[in-house]
Length: 297
Image (cartoon, rainbow, N blue to C red; front, top):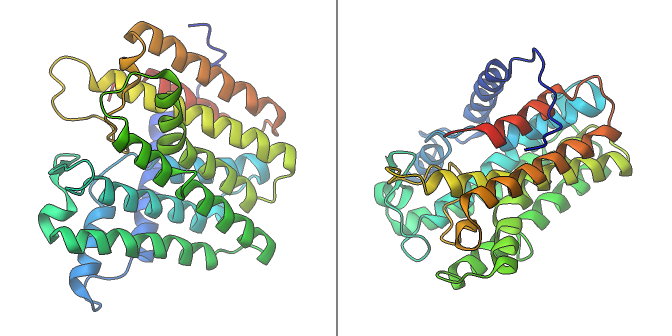
C-alpha cells in the first residue's frame, strides 16, 4: 500500500477512548429518561443507543469542526444527532422484515427485547430526536438549516434508506457498480454527512466543506470494505461491523487482496482531501484514516 499516512506521536487510542466517553456522556443527557412516559419506548431508545460501538461518526463530526475552527463545542449537538440517526438505522435494519438479526454487538436486538412494533417506533422516535437536537444546536439559523438539509439528505431515499432498499433487492448479485452504490449510500453517506456537519458547525467555507465531504465519503467506503474483509475471516461467525450489516459484500466482486488495495486507495483520497484544510488541528482526522485501514476488529 502506497499510503500517505504520516506516522507521528499522536495517541489515537487515547483520543478515541476520550472522545467515545465524551459522546456517551452527552448521549446520556440528551436521550429521554427511562422513567418518563412512555417508559417502554424511552427504555428501548436508550437500550438501542447504549449497546456499544466505536462512536466513529460523532467523533468525526467533532474532529472536523475542530479542524476548521480549533474547537468542537458547536458540533456537539450535530454529532449527537448523527449518532442517534445512525442508531435508528440499525434498529430498523435488524427487524425481521429487513436483515432479521437477533443480536447486535453480542446483545439481543431491540425487537427481540421490546417487540417488533416497539422496535419500529423506537427507530421512528430516534430519527425525530436527531432532528430535534439539530434544532437545539448552538448555531446560527442559516447553519441550522444547512445541518438539517445535510442530515436529511444522508438519511433519505438518496442516502441510507435508498441504500437499504437496494441492499434488500441485491442479495446474491455480483455487480461492482451496484455494490459500490449500496456501500456509498448505506455506509459512506453518514460519514460524508458527519464530517460536513462538523464543518458547517465551524462555519467552514465551500472549499473546506467540499474537502471534508470528500474525506468523509472516501473514509466511509474504506470502512465498509474493511468490514467486509473482516466479516469474511475464518471463525468470524458474528458480523464485526458495528454499524452496517449488509448482505452485499465487496468480496462478491473482488478478492480480499483487491479489496484491501481499493480501501487503501480510498484512504489516500481521504487524506489528500485534508491538505486544503488548516493544518493545526487535523491530526485526529489523519489518524482516524490510519485506524480505518489498519483495524482488525
